[in-house]
Length: 461
Image (cartoon, rainbow, N blue to C red; front, side, top):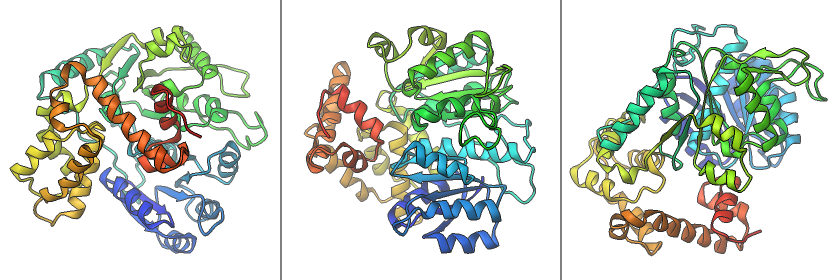
C-alpha cells in the first residue's frame, strides 16, 4: 500500500483513476488542480505523485513536478498526457518526473507504472528490501506495502494445468513466454513464476513495452550515463539493472521496436548489457519473462518480430486461457476481486448467475472493472443485479447474443472478431473515422486501436 497524490482537473477521469488506484490497495489523495496539489504537498508526504500534464489550458503538470522536487523529493512522479511526444517526455524528466503515461491508460498499465515508480523511489532511498518477492520500503513514515494475493484462481481443469506448468517453469532459470488475450492475467502469471522461483527474494520489475516511446526505449531498458545525450543530466539506472538478482517482466513485447529487439537478444545470449554512453558492460543477472496478446509466430512471418528473439523467449511457452473458457472460476474470482476492491458486500445468486453468462470479452480485467462499478453504485450490503441490464443491452447491440457466444466453441475466434469489428466500426463511424477519438471512446490506447484496425483491415484517419 502506497500514499499516492493524484492531480487531475477532469472530474470523471479523476474519479476513475482514484478508484483504480484504491482497488490496487493504495491510499489516494485526489486534487483538482495545481493549487490543491500545492496545499496537499505542504502538509503530507507521498510515495508516488500522478499528475495530468494539461490543466487550466497549460502544462500545469510540470508545475506539480517542480513542486514535488522541492517539497516531496523522495516521491516518484508519473505524468499523464494525451499529447505524448519525446519532447514532452524529455521536458518532464528534466524537471524530475520518473515516467509518463499516454491517455487513456489501462488499469494494467497504471498498476505496472506505479509499481516501477515505487521501486525507483525505494532504490533512490537505498532502502531496498529483499525480504519479500515484491519490493517494500523500510521508511517508517511510509505506509507502503505492495504485497498481493494470488489471483490465479484455478479450480477449473484448464487453469490447474496452467498453474502446474508455471510451477515447473519457476524451478529453472529459463525464459518464459506467456501468451493470451488482454485481461487474462499474464502479469499475475509472471509474478507467480517469480514468487515460486529461486529468485523470489530479488526484485520483480514489470515494464509495458507499448508505453515507452521508441526514442526513450534504449535508455529505459539499459540506463544511461551522464552526458550520453543532450538531456542526460545524471546517471540513470535502467530496468535491467533494477531487476538484478530477480525477474524482468516485459509485457506486450510485440510492441518492442526491432532495433531494441536486437539489443535484448544480446542480453539473453551474452548475459550482459551496456548502458547508453558507458564504456564497460555490466552483468545481466536477471530472469526474463515476456508476454504478448499477439501471435508472435505470426508476427515473425510478417517480419514484425525477430525470429531469433522469438525462439530465445519461447523456451517455456504458457498460454493463459480466456475467462469464457473457464467460467467455473468466476465465482471464486468474484469473491477475490471484491475483497481486493475493499468491498464487503454479498453477491445474490441471481447476480452471480448473470455474471457467469456475460460475454466478458475483456476477461478478468473486464470482470474487475464491472465489479468495481457495481460496488460503487450498489448499496453497502448487496450488489444490485439490475445494474447488469445495461451490459446485456450492450451485448444485444452488437448483434451477437449470449446464446450464440455459448454455442460458438468451435468457431469462437470468428465470433470474437465479429464483436471486435462491430465495436471498432461503430466507434469510427461516431468519430467520423478519427482513430484517436475512437480509441478514447472505446477506452483503449491509440496503439491498440491501430493494431485492431490493421488486423481487421479497416481504414481510418
